Structure formats: C-alpha cells, structure tokens
Length: 460
Image (cartoon, rainbow, N blue to C red; front, side):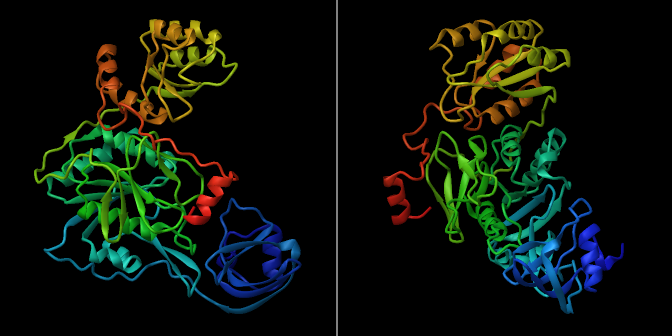
C-alpha cells in the first residue's frame, strides 16, 4: 500500500484508485447521500474497508460509505506537517511556576486547517503555540513521565507519579497540573489523594472529552482552567478540573475522592457524588464553593506514601451471583475485596459461605453501595447484620472505586488487618463524609414539567 492511500484497503482503496485521489487530497464527493467537500484523512489499519473519511470545513470528520459514492473530483492536495513550530515560552519572575506532568496521549493539540491534520503539542513551546493564553497565567515547564492510555494506568504509574509530585514540591514548584485521559482519571486522582498527603500546593488533574480537531473541543479551556488553578488557587489538594455545565462558561474543581466520570461523551462528564464541588474556575480565577479545604502553604513539606497492593479487586454484586466468584479470588491469592452491594450494602445468601471462607483465609472484605449516593447501613436489615458478623466491613459513603484504591493502598503498607481497618475507616482526603449535604444528591429527570421549565430559564 502506498503512502498516498495510507490505511485504506478493500472497497475503499478501490474507489480511491479508480478516481485517482489519495490521502490529503482536497476533494468534492458526490454520493447518493449528497455532496461533501473535505480532505481525505488516513485510516487506521484496524478500520473497516467500506468508508472514506473526510475532514470537513467545519472541523468535523465524516465517514462516507464508498458504495454510495458516484464521483470524486480532486481539487488539490494538502501535505501534512505534524510538527508545531516552537516558540519560546515567555517567562517572568512575577508569575508563579507551574509544572505539567504528562501521562500519555496529547495534553493539547491543534488542527492544521491547511492539511486537516491534528498536531500534538506538549513541550512549553508547543503549548504556547497551541494555547497562548497559558503565558498570561504562569511560567510553564513540562515533563512526560510515560505514554499510556488511561485504561493502562495502574499501580506502577500511580507510584511514579506520586514520587514525581514529591520531587517537584521539594524543588519549589507553585502548582502541578497532570494531563490524563478521562476514562480512569478518578481512579488516579484517588490514588494520588492517598499517596500524596499534606501537599502545600494545588495538584490538578485535567483531560479533555473531545479532541482538538473538533470545534466543540474542551481541551484548551480545560488546560487554561487547570493551569489557572495550579498557579493561583488557595486550594492545596488533589483535584479534577473539567467542564462544569455543558457550555464553557466555567470549570469545576472536584475533590479527588468524591469525583466520578458519569457520561461517556458529555464535556461535563465529571460530577462530585454525595457532596458539592470544591470550586468553580474561569480565566479570572478560582471561586470556592466551600471552605473546608486544605489551604496553600509556603513550606515545602509533603508526605509521599507510594504504596499499592495489586492483589485487590472491586466486585459488583448482581442477583444470582455464585460463591465461586469469591472462592476463585481467594484461590488466586487476592488479599482484599471491595464489594459494591445493593441497597444499603447487601449480597445474596448463597455467597455467605464463600465470604466466611475468604475471611478465614485472611482476606480483607469491605462493602460499598452500587447506588453511588448514600451510605452503607448494614445494621438495618438481617442481611447486613449477618454479613458484618461474617467479617465484611462497611465503608460509610466511600465510592466503590475509591474504596478499591484505598484498600490497595492500605494493604500495600501492612498485612495487619486491624491496621488496615483503621486506615480504611479513618477519613484522609474527604473519601468519607459525616453527612451528605442537602444538595449533594441532585439528579434532574428530563421530561418533568418543572425541570423542563428550569432548563428553559437557566441552562442545561
């Protein structure tokens, strides 16, 4: 396959060859679905062989079934250049110093409208070219720690990231931004909340739901908000910074142990669960929504506790779960199990003997609720009391993913189950709260007259 037809095969390759066009051709396509004008984009070797992909003038991509194509006219070619010309990032002694740590993917990128290509940016010079507003906020330096998709983030990355944060704080940095994929950002945030304690500076995790080649991309705005927070905020905690509403009027700062990704594609996917966010953030600065946060300090002290036991799992209970699920975990050497139970923290009776065998084998078992909002209350019904008698420990209102991360962190430090219990049930970073505020549980149901009126009058 020639570079001119990169990624195309089968029927799609036949169509490109027949009409004598290739990748990066500026074309006019006539199909049974209408006329399309755009740039032919390359395809992955894993993509199907039935579609031609164009970058439209709007910035969006469209896939055209080649079986609907009647004619293609080449109007020109636009060769791709994947390197952003670097400009020296302007620095000033009057501005705070922020470090951007990369974990993989592109932290920021821009669309080259001449070629239709998405160009990654990471170095300070590249970021200045892609998001020049950053230079108004801080002196920015960057370090790419590793390059993995967020689903491949795990204990080794958590530990390396925590140690890197410790080094930056010791060296006098004023704030830290961590670029991270959104899918598992809340897991990494929880890990850092336990591994990096008593930070004197803000630690802000940020990502984007939509890539920079889309007009609705949130990448640049999220990066501006996160950098503003790291440079100027008084909140010295691990936070997640992403869109607040679906519009771009402000970002939200979520506490690391109470945040969760709740929608696969919304830009406002991250929600604080069972509480309210820490603050809003705009280009003008950070506006706290509460006062019970750790404040920025002038010292350089931070406690780095990079522990993680990998043989810990999170099990989602479902009706008709069989006991061999638990038995198998024990047989394979798991030392901790977090169960997301139904209601107030329940599982079915057939699993009880397996729970007893696991506890007898020294496995730590903790209960959370799969409702996400609310507390484990295992003393209300016989089921809960029976399970506690068999050794399952309730975790108050800890989110399931947070309980999993914390149990792995606790077991990474000690095999003494009483000490593990003490660590698990002692609030460290807001993972357990005394109560849910009255506005900590708000889920609006679309279609209801009062909600539709609210959406019309305010915004979605």
